[in-house]
Image 1 (cartoon, rainbow, N blue to C red):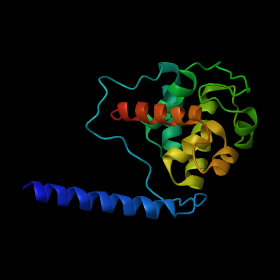
Image 2: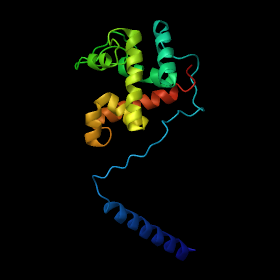
Image 3: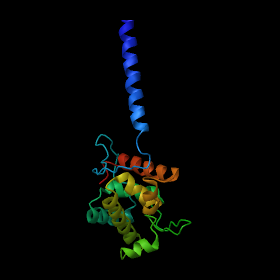
Image 4: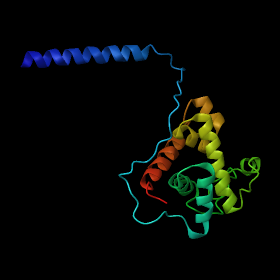
Amino acid sequence: MRLRLVLFLGVSVLACTGAVAVGAGAHPKRIVVQARIPAIPPRSETVIGRCPIPKQFRQAFVRAARDTGFQLSMLVAVAQVESRFKPNARSSADARGLFQLMPATAASLKLDADEPSTNVLAGARYLKILLERYTRTDLALAAYNAGPTAVDAAGGAPWSETQTYVANVQQRWASLAACS
């Protein structure tokens, strides 16, 4: 019995060593981006009650979800992490509103960053553009937070702040799976 265990352990160590050696030989700058369907939160996680959208913004969120094809729960998660549903929120970089959009980004979509209903729609449309570009939800969210240039240069979330942002949005999104 001990001999079998020692042999099994030896084979496992050799297999791991080989895998590490092969991985170490890989080119460190090579980034392979695989297209995948955006993650959908598991159905087993549910929210008691309705979506936590303030009543005055609900119609804007429903419209944006319908317009972009995003789940309402995803848009709610982004707004919660971005502004905690504060329509007058403004960052030090001058990002504004519920979705913390730069005025130029909203203007490029022919929408107003300072008007809550169009801020939500602009944020959803911009996120859709990023998702079409990156084909992965995590990269689209990273680009929404840090900007596409930073994500392209880093090959992913460029800073720990952005990694935390993506994780927070995805966690919140999953917890809102039943949001409708």
